[in-house]
Every structure is written in structure tokens, then in C-alpha cells.
Length: 148
Image (cartoon, rainbow, N blue to C red; front, side, top):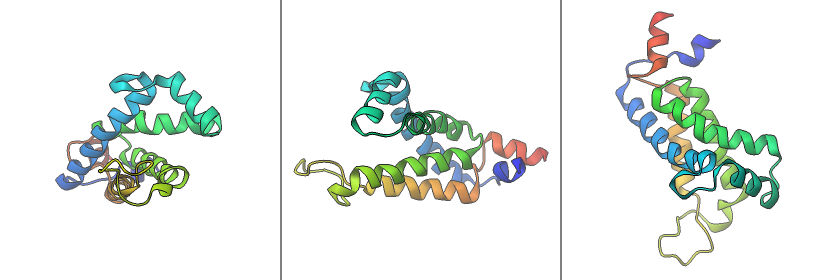
């Protein structure tokens, strides 16, 4: 089973997708987990998720872990399929709970009540590519799949 999760090729295109998704979600995950980049940190984010959004505590913890630990996994290329799955799930839930109410487009003009879900669709598409093809070149998964 582990070999199916880590199996990948030297596909450099997937590497670009993996690193881009990992970098973007590292910033978002660090906001939630560490309070970096203007975020509220673990305590503040858990409070918002559980009290304001009424997300059960275990799911709130999983969401934060998916963004923060998943982004690190993507950057180093370790269990990229699992990391991408967690991020895709986060984005699907974000669309369903929040962003679908504001339409497709981001709030570029500042006239909407919130952000649309176009960004989330792109993140899901990139995550799907990683789930299908693996972590690609320059990844721990690639090193592991060679040794297996």
C-alpha cells in the first residue's frame, strides 16, 4: 500500500505543480497553525472554526493539519498524494461552506460580500494532478519509489 502512495516518476511538470501548491498552502497553513503572515495562530483559528463556523473540533484540527503539514509534505515531496488529498478536501469544504455564496469570481473589484471560488477550483485541479501522477521529480516519494 505504501508503495502505491509514493510511486511516481521524474515528471518535472508535476514537480512544478507540487511546489507551487505547497508554497501557497504553506503560507495559509502557517497563518492558521503558527500565526505567521498575519494569521490568528492555532488557538485563534480553532476558536473561529469551532465557535463561529460550528465545525467540530476534530475536523478543525484536520483542516489546519492538512494545510500546514500537507504543504510541508508537498514541498519536500513526501506522501504527496495524501497531502494533495487533504488540501483538495479543505478546498471542497471551503467552497461548500463559504465561497459558493459569493459566486465564481474572486472579489477583484471589492464589490462582492466575499471571495468567490475560482481560486479553490484551481487548487483542487492541481491537487488532483498530484493525486493522479504523484510527487514527481526531486521528491522523497521519487527516492522511495526507486528503492522499492
